Length: 180
Image (cartoon, rainbow, N blue to C red):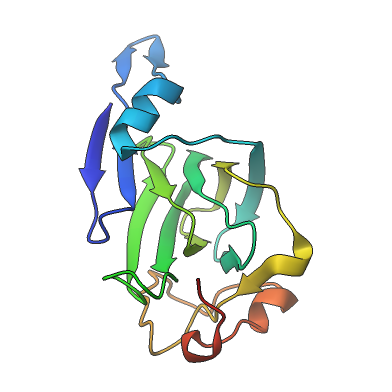
């Protein structure tokens, strides 16, 4: 496993060692000890989630103001552009974002720690997205940032307006959002 730093030091790209030949491939998709060593702290995952979305769907940017969730995310079919926004007001990278292409082909994972808003846009015909969380989902604490907030300036690789949920259409601008 190779750990790649992003422009936000707490967000990490995790690249597995893949063993492949003409029969297919094998890789270790998660090893608790190696993961904790890679990010430099203890983590307990409590839930796994799996979604499938069509091309042009954008989910996010979501976070929980209480019971914040760290997420280890990956794509097992298709491709997405995955984004993390630092919502920690005491952080040197507060209000900054990082975006990474995750795909079934590159097999990369992204560690998005607690205190970040998270979302992704599907750039292939469809994508299946898997992620582990460090806390459970609590509807009352979930918040949504506007995916197109000009202050954040996330550069989504979309050619058309994304397909978003009604909830995400109500996302707040960063300046009005609750932060950690």
